[in-house]
Amino acid sequence: MQNSRKAEKIISVAGTAVLTAAFALWLTGSGYGAVGYIAAAVSAGLMLWLCLRFVPAWCEFWRTPGLGIRESGSEKSGCAGIFACILLWDAVILVIGYLLRAMLGYDETAAEYAGVWLSTDSRHYMDIARDWYLSEGSIDRLVQLVFLPGYPIAVRLFSYLTGSYLVSGLCVSALSFAGAGCVLYKLLRLDMDETAAKRAVLFFAVNPAAFFFVSPMSESLFLLCVLLCLYLLRRGKTLTGALFGAYACFTRSVGVILLVPMLFELVHKRAKPREYLALIIVPLGFAAYLGVNYAVAHDAFKFMQYQSEHWSQHLGWFFNTAACQTENAVSTARDSASLLLGLWLPNVLAQLISLAVMIFAAKRLRASYMAYFIAYFVVAIGATWLLSAPRYLAAMPALPAALGLLSEKKERFWLIAALDAAAFIVYFCVFLLRWQVW
Image (cartoon, rainbow, N blue to C red):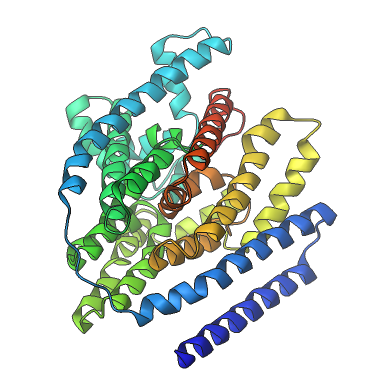
């Protein structure tokens, strides 16, 4: 026990030193105003608080070997209802969107309304599903190489049944959305009671950015693969889980971060040496994407050039993102409601609120999921010139899991549910108005 306490202190001190040094280094080269620096300090401070609360849980998780898991009857029986409910909710979101557009003053046919769902990155995925990646042509088509092929391939295959790429995309997203809800429930039932797991599924389905799971984009399929990877790993089917993890990497580059919770689980269950080979299988999905880059552009890392030149994106510090977005929110507050309410304010709030939620859940949520959140947040939110924090964080399953644990009291549940629903309606309306929601 004494050695464990010593290890906790060493990890905590080392982590604090690294984060402090990174923040100090960033300060020397940044040029923000007071508001930006305050936002960055708050973001870094919340992350440090979260990590310090997580370290004891991490050490305890690795110190205590995992026990065997058995599937409960209620876990099996609850899935069909969850799948049906989320499929229905998916359709309701589409219908609500049409009605809200009418209330907002848009007089359009159903076909014209469908175009709203192609006004973000969705059109890129549909182009890839139809034409694959182009090696020559306009730059707007060439840069589509940055969108990974996992989702477009699924849409292309489904289009042979529907005859329409848009309908196929909506169907793939809907089925993946419903499937993700089921697997999330099964995964959480391994650690939580039925009520807490169902609360988590509710918060997953009605989070403020849930309409992105309906949209013909990669989030729902990616999340389904992530959850299948984690669930199968927990059930002892390590190889099969790793294959789904590889497809997650083939769908979104942040799928590689699955290596973090997988490593935590393998150490926890005292896995055999051969089981660690699963950690090699997962990145093969991203390696396949690099192969696509080479086949199309004769450069395995061409996507990085496009990301930098066309979208001004590369790896950065998550607290720099908070500074940049907060300063943009302040500067546009008076002049552009579309930029403030559609882009900058939701991005800032999504980051800070998610960190706050995880701080309160740090000692209750499974350590592997907490580690996954921290690594995912640092990488995904650290992307420079980030425009999509709410969408990226919607695909992080640890958040609804944490809310499911923190809402056991009835009053707290209704408060969180009401805030979630209100934020969903507001953010959805802003999306339907096309106020820079990405």
